[in-house]
Length: 411
Image: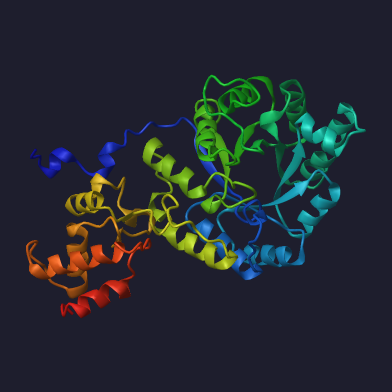
């Protein structure tokens, strides 16, 4: 079948953009929820650098820890960078945490408080509903009205909360001065289905908050225990369209975080850009891979090679049919050019490699074209196949493939 490049179209032509009637804002929690992931940590200097990198891609708000000395050192360094992004502290519903945030010179805070009976009865078994509401009111009023802080309230375990209680809770904190309520899908059971009922359904939750509470803004914060964090985050954004002027998405870069992690900042941004026509991040998408690499180096987090968008193998091809297709037209097996996000195409040589991929790799190494019927190509293909007859699993490294070419007196 023959078609012209114009008839096939470029990669952008395959995305049917669906405009949103709401402005999505990214509230990145890599430096708060993300670094709570077991086994990772970052120095104050690297923490500040990560904040700077996030600011550089257009993240509007950055949430950070501030309770240990290294955290406070990091906050001071972050403030010194005069970022465009707002920087917020994270607090429990305790006045001492607010005082700590004030000492760190934050202008806004997020106050986390449970809203499910599971959490409430576990943490405060002897408190009545009135006691709980009074407790959170005192802290929100202290932060918002007495100290003049912008206040987000995080409804911990919202997707398992009784709606009658949660509605009362939201109206209480709104009266106390909170401007945004964060829907926290704390254990990742939220549903994106527009027909899913409360409390699991994110669209239903967004609609109910808009219809039945006084809070001025909302935020979506989801976990990935069932692998649905990005999907449910996007569901919240779409549900807010036409109801709110702005909607916040709480995410972490690379999805790092406790247990299964969080909705990935890069995935949410790419979905907004590609499917919903949100262009404000477009100029800085190429910085994504740099940020992923730095976070990995700074925290000790190992990025899975097949991680979507930013893994080293996100645009890697080894099997014969895939490699041949990509060499013919990258659109066959790539959604968009890897350079868009600062990544690169990689054709690996391994058990599944065909003649096209090996030919391409040889041409890359020797710097000239090779005829598809050249005997030396056939010899190298045979050498590669023989290696894998003995049970090898890993792809060949650059040096290993170069050694084959050297032994065949090709280079």
